[in-house]
Image (cartoon, rainbow, N blue to C red; front, side, top):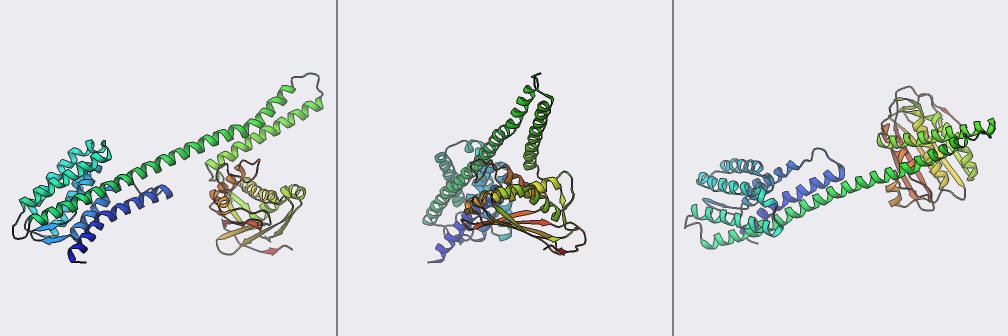
Length: 427
């Protein structure tokens, strides 16, 4: 491979590489929601291309520098407008001035005229089809190259053969760069539309689920209130109806709280939550459910009155109840659940909840905590969604490991609050 071919490949990669970096940044922006990735960053990558192209030219034929610098200049101006165009022009002038050369001013005039033409065509260009865009870019770069070649022509260094080869290579490079830019922009647009559609779908599902969940207790309450209008019913029956109606209203309020927790997981009041007592409370609530499913709950806790996190105790206990209840229901034929608490002397509280149930696939694990995802036939996924939101709201995280037919383990990691720790083992 001769030197000219090597320089050609390097210079061509100087144009293409920033385009791939641009796409990478935008994919990171959409996937991880990086706030600092903005659309104006489009200007950074033509700048990088220009500097690389001028640093690694195809051929150095004094006073000519044969390279691909016009490709990022024209593309950046057509897609970004005149502001981006003149920023790129300033970068090009600065780089060219530092590199030196006796045709600096003449080449500058040609590049200025090229940038002005591209700026004037920018709005018109963006409305055109792909074929028309490729044609406009090719004609624009070809005219700029031809005028530049003949105005700065020195017969001893520049031949028609070199000129035609250089023009042809630039046009091919411009076509490829235009196609790649359009593909990247189409991908960005599709990603944006996909995310917007997903948000609308989640909103519609939330609305449907909310109306269904809250409709049941309200319908029941309405029914019992209507029964109270019957004067023939006894006082005892009337009081019983009132009690049930009040319970159903409480149920509706709890559903609303659960949805609000998902929307805003950060706790309203940051009180001290004693972890040991909260786990004990959750187990007491679920004992009848565990006995009904023939499930034994084994606990291995270290009594620690000063082991706590900051948050809302009621929500945290409900979160534990959701998780343990799901573990109980994952063992239809009975089994054991092991719960351990490790409040160490560093900055973490670790709660482990392990069952010997049916387990989950990796895909199911990845979907845990998402709205409406559940492995139960009659479930809504609301409980686990709230559980993940609550733990996240107090600064913790949940990790899950599972093997089908082997069981599932939940690892809950929480930030420990301040206080001395005096550990008394419980047997």
